[in-house]
Length: 469
Image (cartoon, rainbow, N blue to C red; front, side):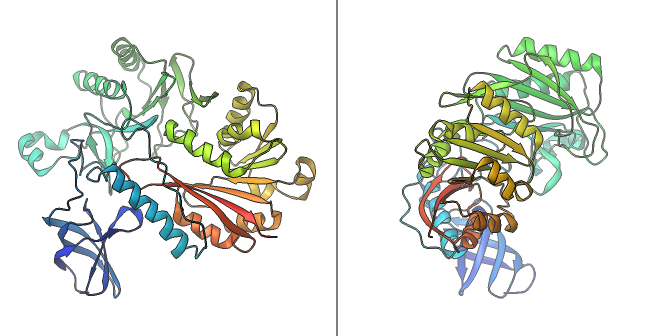
């Protein structure tokens, strides 16, 4: 079993494990399987890692298909890195996600918790994202069949789409994507067609050359549409021709920007997008709250489920209108503003200054006068003098990134000892790790999983912690 190039034959897939990998057991050994397999499939697995008690591999052949399988709806399924669970009925996706949350709380957190209510499934399982980012590349990913059809021209094929997983310089050309409402595909295909017709250069990430780099789209439930075209260098005549053609072809665009990025990486947070048309931002709504979203703003990428997530958070906080609420990792202030009418006072803290600027602007736009926002590291900000000035927290809401909270922050929360903590997480594994540390003073009172990203293994989870003493 520990030899290289081992292929296990006729392996029954029994379950899913973390990160969406399928699970099987062979002679008592746990096998983690990639390759779009479903519990109930019987597959051959080529091992890539082979340890004493476990192994990893990829399914190379499916002998028997699970009765749970359904036909994927996207032509790009299996090549594109997204929507990997299209072959599962949505009800089964939700069941596996719920099980993932429970497993992490038990196995990583070693926690006691009440029975979980049903996961909150998505209202829309397609066209649910308000933001997408596409990549231009002069190195299109082609299948063996496409290479044969392309002949000598295959190395020079352009693409506008998504990176192939684990191949940083290969991009899959996407014709129709089901993640975002129209006019997303019309915008993307209009730009690609114009660029091909006028021989505009697509970026070469290895050589760090080429003109067209990225395309970022925001399509809001309000009907507003923002397009940000990222280019490597200024070429005014070509840029104006392309952008004017886009506006003439797609009348629904409300804001059109371009960003010049000569750097090696694709991040635009240290760059300045320029407005070509419109007001330079879009507005989105959660309940009756309005939020200004600029080209560099962070906002929940699923507006519909973002609202559901915030409702759970507000409910778990148990606010009566008198409490002082601290909103940690507050971003642009969306959670704090959402709960503000039920709180006496909201104090938001976020490391990124630009996000705090947005939070203050959003609070003013929504006439929220009981919320204040501060830029900096929570470990540095939340000292005795800060609490003396702004009040000790009755409720702490924390919504950290996927890596979870720093150990120093969990220690700080134990020191502060607020009566209630509401922990919002996009990674139940790191959440469970942090909850195990907070278990010193807190018990888990409520848990609610929320599905933000249908057809993927990702899951959001909200936990209410109650101080024991």
